[in-house]
Structure formats: structure tokens, C-alpha cells
Image (cartoon, rainbow, N blue to C red; front, side, top):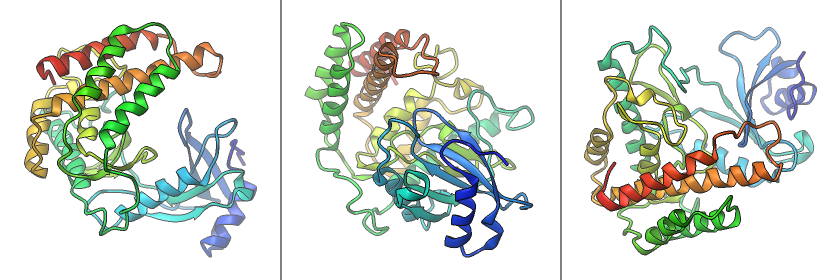
Length: 348
């Protein structure tokens, strides 16, 4: 029986048997499927369990990261609240805020069977451009559905502070950049200043995912275009929905474009909608005016550059042991240039 760090089967099994009221969980196998700089994800399978029986356990990283109940409780809360809405999310099963159990809070949810596309689409799936177009449109429609959720009605009225969201975001990431400067970058300083001076007026508050993109979704393995589940809600809050659209565009390279952020180039394959087509479909589904979309794209590139600069700084300080950060510093300049271009001419 495997014993991955952070989720001991000898502890998890009896605990799940108790809280789920099912002795089948008393003995389990646990496999770590997602580790990194964010939360840890494990598959928990009861011994002798059928294929459809495993569940997913999520917890904060082990080690020096502050493992407060807040992050896990927020993730669990937003996924649970979105359950009855058109937004596809896993069904939550249990939240544990008692740090005595695993040393950190965690929650358990159903395991959704779906296709996780990161760098390439598997052969035999969505081989035709028309199928890839449907995948792109499916992603847009899910994002539009999320941004159309009445967050008050689903119990998320106090999930964030939407007033002043954009200005706060610019300040937050500017402070992040200033605290982790890897070197003097006047172009990045100038981009931060321009963004702060030109914050647009928010049209509608909504649930913001914070990192919505293709590889944070599970695709329907039998029907290209169907989205089985949206994952990784750790950055979600209430705010301006167009922030999600701006960040999605950073992760949506088109045919003939060079990846500057290290993102997947799947969306450059024939058939995927262009960013202009994405914007048109999103605007049609939500009724939002995208006249200021260039600002949101510029901000998204700025935010991405600040995040990368932070990783570079932590790597130089020896705080990224075991993580390959080679080439990260070279991504910052091109991201700043893309952000500036978005503000200058609306290039999306």
C-alpha cells in the first residue's frame, strides 16, 4: 500500500469510513496525481473498489506553506455552491477543517472522469477542425455560464469584495512585483503605472475563477465540446468577470504565434476559434460590452509577468528546490511587451 506524503492511507481510510458512513473506505490506496506550487490532489480508492468508486482529496502543500483552513474551505464552498448551477463542477462529499487529522485542512469530492488536455490532444480525439472548434466554444460557454451565476442566490454573497476589485488587483500585483524584483525592469514599472491610471469601470460583478483555461478543465472523452468539470478554484473570488477573459487570452495562442508565457499551443491548432471569435461568442452569451477588453488583456500579461518574476526571485533565493525554473526569466520581457501592445492598439 502506497503512503504518499500528506495523505496517509492508514489515517484517511478509517476517517472516510467514519464520515461517509461506509466501511468500504476503511482500507484505501492513495495516489498523488497533482503536485506543485499549489494544492495537492490525490486519488483515493477503496481496496477492491470498482473503477467508478475512487474519490479526490485536496489539501494544501506540505512543508513551509501556511496550511490554514481558509483556502480549503473556500475551494469547497465555491464548488459546493456551484453544484446546482449550469457550471460543471465535481460533487463535494466532505470538508475537514480539523488539522489534527492530516496536519492541514482538506476536502473530498467525487472523481470526474474526463480528458485532461495540457500540451496536446490525444490522437483519435477531436482530430477534425470542427470538433476542435466545439471544444473552444464549449470553454467559452462554460465561462459565460459561470459569469452569469447569481452569486447571491447560491449563497456566495460574502465570498469576496467586488467593489474596487480591479484597482485592488493592480495594486496587489504591483506590490508583488516590487517585493520580488529579479532585476531592474522599467518597462514592467511603466506597464503597472499605465494600468493603475486606466482602470475601467466594472459592468457586472460575478464569480471569478482566477485561472480559467483549457488545462484547468476536464473534457468529455466521448463528445468533443462537452466540458465535464472545471477544476482548480483556489484563486476564485467575487470581482470583474472580464478579468477571467483577459487571462484566458494569455493562454489562447493563435495559429502562427509564438508562445511567450510558456503556455500550451493547443488552441493554435486548426479549428479552434480565434481570440476575436472567443470574444464575440462570450459577449453574445453574457451581454457584456468588451470595448475595454484590451485593458484586461494588458493586465493579465502584467499579472503573469509579476508571477513569473516572483518565481525567478524565489528560485534565486533557493526557495524552489526541485522545481525547474530555467528559462522563466526570459518570459518576463515578452509578456510585458504583449501587455503594452494590448494597451496601445488593442491587440488581442
